[in-house]
Length: 279
Image (cartoon, rainbow, N blue to C red; front, side):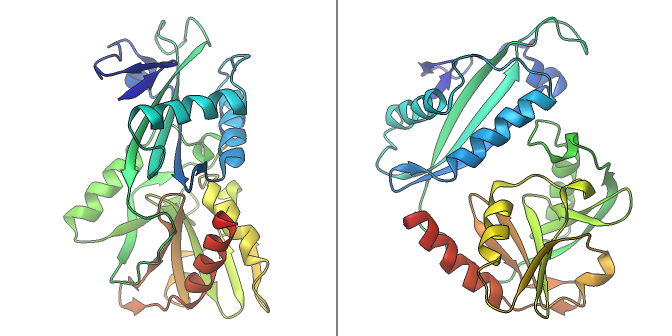
């Protein structure tokens, strides 16, 4: 069952053919994890959504407080008998229908959906995980490219490319030919005593888990963590590569072309991450 503007719907056929998220990608979403009776990193998700709505010039309803949206999420979990489990939550906010490219209104509606997850804690998957570059299309870096919006055509086509070529994932580049991120998360590179991830100015998603890792990385003794551009030439010189998102946590990359990688820092960070969420 889905939560459609505050009403739990058993019939999922409630989206109009005129919905602007469907027609123009005029929608934003947050993918969240619910575990141990709480929404993980909820404050970060909420403020990212509010900032994104302002960038998209969506009208933020007066009742769109942290408390209101959290209550609606919990109501949806309860309706799906997931309040005592671990779950994946998607909160989709779309501009109300009307108009073509130019909307008739900036008012919004929302849909909340949930799916059960198996693991409360984050687990490091150290099995074979191979990536390559996806170079058919490039990200044009701007504030819009940092948003979690419905405009994900590049990521969809890139995911099909990865599947067709037997890859677990692909890394995408911006128009300056710098690494931006993976298809489903932010990228971190470890070389010697430096951990770095592409800066938002390069066009990467403003990931919630990315922010957690930036903070946790500061606690690693003798390591420096920084936001800096990553050239494709750096990948094969790296000691370690890993992808981050709020559902998986940290996904180590084991192979890029002929280079294989360790997962030492990823293992340390996942321990610190679990300590943080279970505190």
